[in-house]
Amino acid sequence: MDEILIGGLLALMVVTVWGILRTRNLFAVVVLGGIYSFLTATVMVALDAVDVAMTEAAVGAGVSTVLLLGALYLCRSEEARPMHKPWGAMALSATVTLALFHGTVGLPGFNDPQAPIHQHVAPRYLNEMKQEVDVPNVVTAVLASYRGYDTLGETTVVFTAGAGVVALLRRRKRKGKDKA
Amino acid sequence: MNLAAYFTYIATFVLMFLGLFIVMARGNLIKKLVGLGIFQTSVYFLYLGPAKLVGGTAPILSDAFKVYTNPLPHVLMLTAIVVGVATLALGLALVVRLREAYGSIEEDDILAQDQASAGATEAA
Amino acid sequence: MKHDLILRVIAKILIPFLLLFAVYVQFHGDFGPGGGFQAGVIIAAAVVFYALIFGLKAAHRMLPESWVESMMALGVILYAGVGVAGIVLGGNYLDYFVLDAHSTVHGQHRGIFWVEVGVATTVSGVMLKIFYMFADRGHLDRQDPAASQESAEL
Image (cartoon, rainbow over all chains, first blue to last red; front, side, top):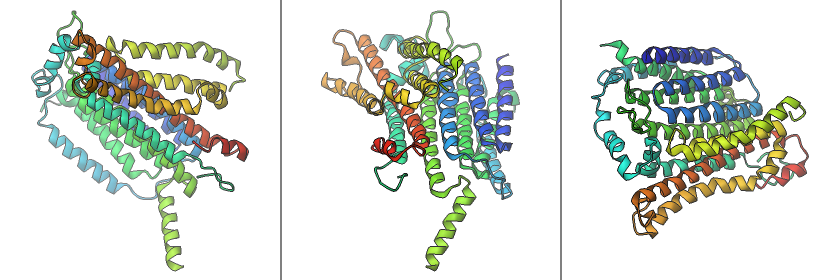
């Protein structure tokens, strides 16, 4: 039942991406991107990744769509008709995908409790969390406590992105020139 | 090979192929950024798929459940999502500046203008 | 959009609930899905909603640019400060065990609490600042040079 649901939603996502590929109206592309993010969040809930789903829904379908619409308002154009035949791009993408496919053959399948990722660190986090940290949400405990350095780096990345956007879009005091 | 056991991987690769194709084959800069986002989302599924255990539950400890989904890929993907939106914001700021400098957000137009101005400065 | 009665009324009803939900997600991130990132983004979404309905000037009056810029940096400083507090109290950097004199579990709770507050502050500040910058870029093109000069020191 889980697999059918996830499979159906993933098929809908592929249809949405096909729509993004073929549409030339950029507003439609942005809205389809928002739909794609919502479908991603739903699939993540079906995969039991509830924290990730909430973040993807808020960030992907919320903030990303707002930023894309803001940039679209400032740029206001439509996509031009493609001038080159895309055979080179298609060949390269197909090669990369087939190479990944070849590499995945050795990986464990869906729902394999003996897979190596369930053997080493994860049981320690799940079992010893009660004595060490005692926070029921294991993802928050791992994010803020066990892997706190990574989260510090990520917060710095977010800050750097903000500083970068400020540096790019800042206006200077200059008479006679209205754009920096 | 049992295809049903690998279906999340198959969907991941289809999305990855389409995302990469949009980034490479389309000339519009905003569409390229959307394609990059699609590519990043497919990578999230690559990590979240193996973590799920059928019959388990979300990794929030409670006395009623014994089997939990692996929380480690969730943590990594949380970071990845936030870094992805940071990349998108910076990319869009660059697109806005490019539009103001060149008047167009089509990659071919921008390259043509650059080559024309490079040719003009060479001839001068 | 502020002349549209339905939008104005619905916005006035919804925005307090949005902010309350953000606070809930932040502090119940320990017990359910949630945490700093989600709460920060929901706060930014609430302010963006306000700016869309009531205008950018009203949003600037409610949450000025300088406050948002300070929020961006304060979150990272708070996070790094929790690490330094770990050193000052005798442990390693970002060691939460030493943050409480009597119980290591309480120390962990304290550390996680302050770290998530720092993350939420930075994330909401950055998302809001980026929205302000995009919105300002389009607006000030059409206004008089005096107004564009007043926000030129961004």
